[in-house]
Amino acid sequence: MNKQSWLPVFSIVLTTLLPVLGYGSDKLPAKADVLRDLRRANAYFMEKWPDPGKTIVTNRERPANIWTRAVYYEGLMALYAIDTDKRYYDYAVEWGEKHQWSTAYQPITRNADNQCCGQTYIDLYRIDNNPVYIQNIKDNVDLMVNSEGVGDWDWIDAIQMAMPVFTKLGATFDDTRYFDKMYALYSHAKYREGGNGLYNPEDKLWWRDKDFVPPYREPNGEDCYWSRGNGWVVAALVRVLEELPRTDPHYEEYQQDLKAMLSALVPLQRADGFWNVSLHDPNHYGGKETSGTALFAYGMAWALNKGLVDRDVYLPAVAKAWHALASEALHEDGFLGYVQGTGKEPKDGQPVTFTSRPDFEDYGLGCFLLAGTEVYKMAGGNNDSR
Image (cartoon, rainbow, N blue to C red; front, side, top):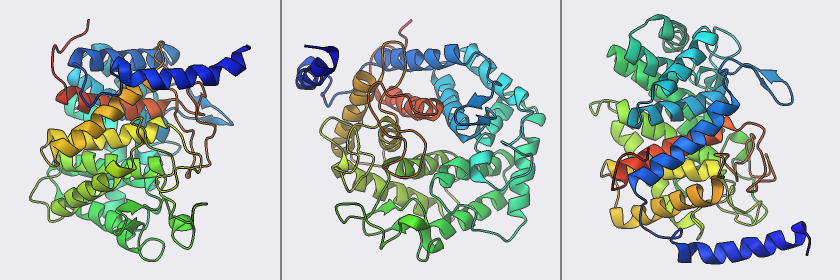
């Protein structure tokens, strides 16, 4: 039997044995185990990219502060909050310095993807109190706050890329104008973009952009709800609610939107703990996928940690998701498998397998670190695995 012929058999055997070995358990692992896996995944990336200023070359060359890398640094800063290794801090500061603390591609932009790096710049500013860190991102957002335009977030990924920047600036400077503009942008995406908004209150999920609003359908006739796209919205709402004052007039709406999405996602989880790339058509490029799964686990774990959702319902979902990510997606060397490459719908970035490498490895790791840090807060046992 050659290698190609025994791999499917091995996969079936392994899938059968995983529940027996405890990986299908509804119980969370110990803190030490979660931290060990986070460190392993992060070490792989930092060793592969020792220079945080090195440009990213795929089909073309890009600066290393684009959204994919910015999402990684969101995860790194979350890891640093529970594992204060100075190497993480130094790596993030060097990243900012090598990009002159500027938004991606150009110093002035309304593009959410190019503003995403600002989330980490603001986090580092709070540590070092160096105004150079945030001058550029503040200037960009101030221009938006002082303008009338509200249609910038016309794809749902943008909500995660930029919305937390507004929240962080508003919280940092105690200035509600950032919160007000943020809601104007969010409400346009939710209620008006593409005609009647990108959020479907019936299914409690989001269409990726106006191109996917009905009559667009998946092959099985269902609406197209892309996993990672909805994951971005979940992550955005978590990161906004983490810092937004409860006195904000829209706080309850954001919280309800998060809880509604999570309630819709629980029954869509696969038996193995992952979510499919197409949430309502499991046969359209169906299979395990890491980035969307990690973002959903992040949202559910955060909501559990805040006491917002029923533990009996959501703890098993989080436990299954984390076991799937840590035991089935994470390689021994720290590489993450089953990450869908960049795109905007189920067919993009395929194939998605244990060994397939997406065009960018960074954002999948960022999602994994965000999820793992919230799972760590829930887990029991010793805090350190050194």
